[in-house]
Image (cartoon, rainbow, N blue to C red; front, side):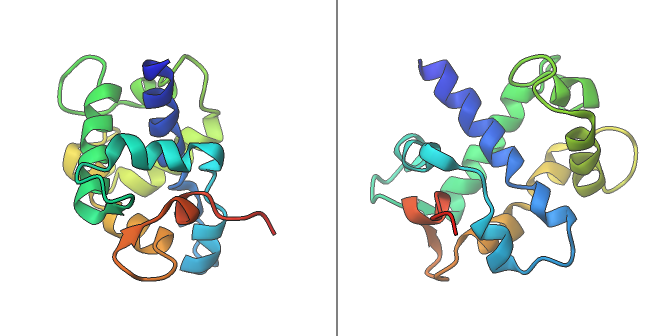
Length: 147
C-alpha cells in the first residue's frame, strides 16, 4: 500500500508539469487543472515534515528530490526517457507525455534530465499550485474542485 501511494504521488506530481508546456494557460488555470484527485491529502500527509497540514516550498522541493532518486533506476544521477516512461510501471506514460516532459525538463537537450534540470521548474509549479499565494500548499490546492 505504501509503495502504491509513493508511486501515485510521484506520478501525480510529474503529471502536474504537463500544463506548463501550454504557454497560453494562466498560472491559475494550470493550478486548477492539476490531476491530484483524491491523493491531495495523502501527498500532504506523507510529505508534510513539520506536520502543519500544508506543504511548504522546501517540503515540495524535497519530495521532488526524493522522487528523482526513485525514478533513476540505474542510479547514474540522470533520468533517461526509458526510466521515465517505465516509472511507476512500464508503459504508464504515453509517448506524448514523455515528449512533453522532455521538452519542459531537458533544457540542455542532451536526452537526459539531470537533478538540476528536474528541480528547476519546482518553483514555478509550486507558485501555480499556490492559488491563494500564502506560500504553502493546502489539500484544497492539491485537489481543486472540478468546474
